[in-house]
Length: 225
Image (cartoon, rainbow, N blue to C red; front, side, top):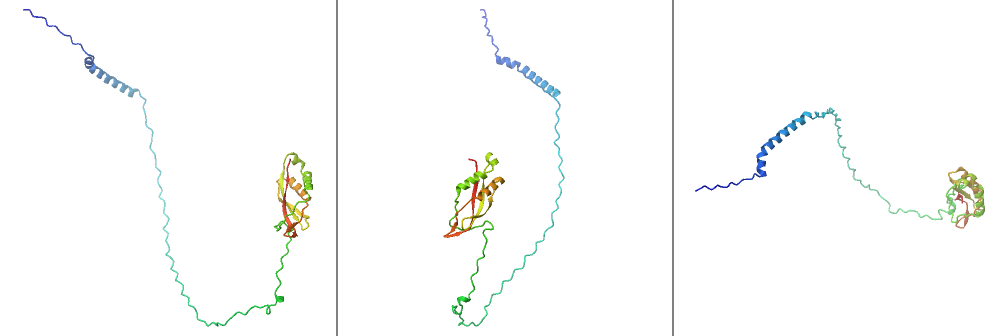
């Protein structure tokens, strides 16, 4: 009897087996390469030095405390005033005040009432009471005077202004005095306003039904139309 040949089966090697066989060489090769790179880096890397962070602290000076202030003792308590005592006195209950009669004090013997001090209101602008204000009577003449007195240089340049003028008007409506209360800012316009003020004519002011002298103020405006 002849022996039959037993067939053999070939086992294929997998990638995992090949990796296991070469793992040792790859591992130690990587370690050697890392070591070489590490030492090469330290060998050729520039030398680094740290900065000086030291500091000096200033010496602290001790502050001398001021001397202690002695607090004075509280003042002595003020004694309460004594209780007032009503004095005893005999008062006559029949005391009366003598009546005041015109027979004992005649009107002829009474002193005259004080006289009102006469004040000259024309000396300077002052408050003067009135119920009816004076009005301008000659407006056309005033307008013509303003055109005539307007300084040509200022008129041609288009410069105008307003001057507030005080007028003292007597009980007949006549202008007795005038003066500038508020300037326009230009001397030439102020002088022109005073020239125009001499042309004004007013009605008399009334305080109830009586003509009275008064101080009033009117604006004189120069402007280019």
